[in-house]
Image 1: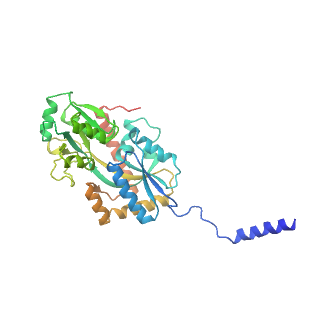
Image 2: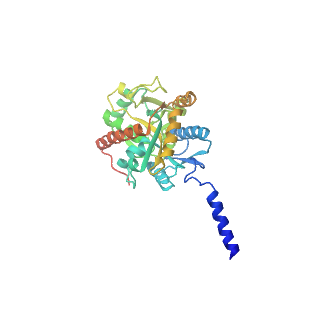
Image 3: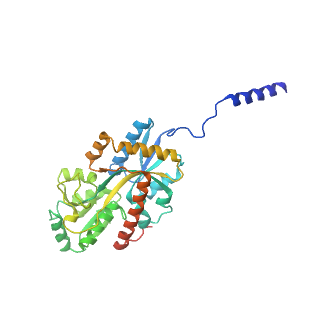
Length: 323
């Protein structure tokens, strides 16, 4: 009885004298995963790995990239939303998954309510490309060729509702052209068929276009922004040939709703610092994208504006939600 009393009392004294552990240790406590919605190798994957390396060097913790392609990015979003909301699983997404997905796919979450915007990393236009077998060297010649073959020529994309699809569809609508859409499971197989002559057009980012353009296996027709791209200064914008809405995508870091504000603040601070670092800016310039300095509030405003804009465009294109 006495021994038991002494043991209990000693334990109580030790507990009283011990320092109280904080409710949450300093973030990040362990490896942080950036979940991306596309397969490895594309612009999103490249930017995610650049961002992960920057955060690793600044926060002294491992940051890894986990490609989770499928369902136009919905699988990646769901992967993040099912994880613990402690800042160790983040979403490295594009405009498509956050501002467009609810209009093109039936999903069981709301991107604007279920994710917290942290910061964009970069923006990029798309590039309209054609195969070397297509008898057109300029955008005007391509338009004339398609008009002479209405409904006969196919174009490829990385999937229905993807911005590679929407940017091409918007161009065709504006130009009054008819082409048949062929969705692929990623942009790489679409380019393979473009090079082989099975399809006539693909719209993709400058990063994804570059290796094919360097060996002259495809033709670059125009960029989808309202002005020329710094990555391709000699390539005209579509707007130089016909009046059409600008299409520019972004890549960004978001967290699932419920993530501690302290984590959001750290990430925002570090990403904004990176966007002003000459070394990081040089990396962005090398791959042909434009840096963005955004606070979470500014990013949230951009998302709301993009969602409203694309809702009107998708309605005008007459596209239906994919199951």
